[in-house]
Image 1 (cartoon, rainbow, N blue to C red):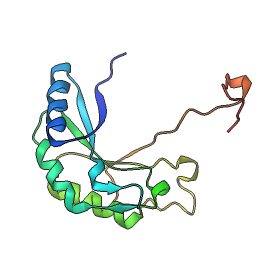
Image 2 (image 1 turned 180 degrees about the vertical axis):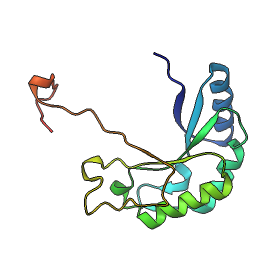
Image 3 (image 1 turned 90 degrees about the vertical axis):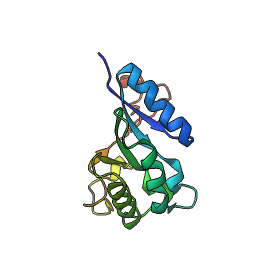
Image 4 (image 1 turned 120 degrees about the vertical axis):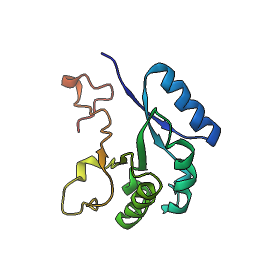
Length: 144
């Protein structure tokens, strides 16, 4: 089996472009996450920083898209803030999809679900390994 996409945190502007060049050599498409666009310790987002990052990479043939947020419920990033990041990404680059990684999967879709329209073109789910005690070969003996 061959994979075609990779997800990458951009560490610096030169790193972002160099990684795309390396991905192109390997025939891969990159989904970029720019950690500088949100402070996960405080839950504050910075839509005004999005265009700076997007303009570095948006014309590269190995770019597939962007991740705007990762697990926003854990850092108190609100739905309104997620929508503001989405709008900033789409304004800077309407040609690539914007993904949101809503990591709080056990609550996704319940009445408390804050995730609604206008937050992403693609929803990513990063369900961590589920341990099902020894019958499921659990290393810790934990069942979920």
